[in-house]
Length: 256
Image (cartoon, rainbow, N blue to C red):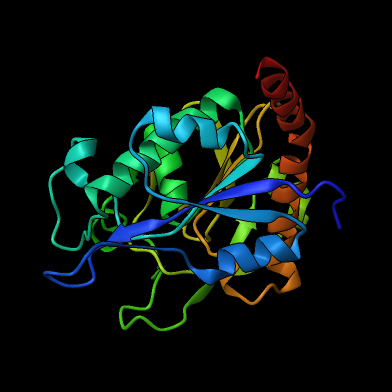
């Protein structure tokens, strides 16, 4: 257990459940459960779209998880709409893109999951396949079209942070996605590949920033040890930022 428990932000989804109903913000419970198990304190972030509102919250956090969701809006990436794409709300996408920019400025430890990985890649200059069955036809299925459980192996890249976390070789992960990384953003590298060559994880190349995105969902498996290895590595990186947050708090108190 970490002595000074780091505060980890979790971005919430934003959607309207039915016509005439008020919008809801929701978070998969696995995100805060796995953070608690790893010794962190989860903080759920509402989809704020103004820096003046969001920045003061981030200044109090030690790390951020960018969560799963549907798809980014193709038009905002300069791409043609596709019938298989189900775009997230404009409010969530604006919020998430702002989060990506602000955490990069702060070099705040980040873990992107599913859509969260794709957002990191796109916002920082990379590109994605809109629909793998058409854009990546040589690949094998990366989701069950009926919505059931689907798993496949991923292979750690040599010299990657993920290899340090999991060891060399391969692991079996859950898989629910119809999109994927086409072009890796500048400053990042592949952390793991599927056997068909699709990038399943990205990570920041430098040692000055813990920023990892994975296409699978480590929060979904009931805190099994394999998935917790990644969560714990992320929480440990965020814990190192705790003294910095404390210094900011002291300075603010003195200024007041």
